[in-house]
Image (cartoon, rainbow, N blue to C red):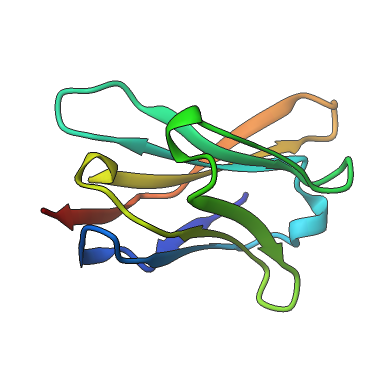
Length: 122
């Protein structure tokens, strides 16, 4: 079973940068797609950035982070990373890594990490 572990969260001032990493227990190339989600207190969990690994790495981003965040895979480290630049207080949330993996019956199963806190001060 896939295990995802997030790291890289922390406290940063507005305008600063953080790089989040999601380490996968299964090879990245065995994963259909991965994404970063975030959930702020009292709000719904939302997709921040996704990457379709099986189709060559196409990406998509929430409108609020376009131009500031970049999702990528690192095969050497077996991680999916989220580079976050020009952070804003509105980016404060718990960030979660997600992966979809096909099982033997070709059902697409979903796996979640436990999250890492990102706090952006004004």
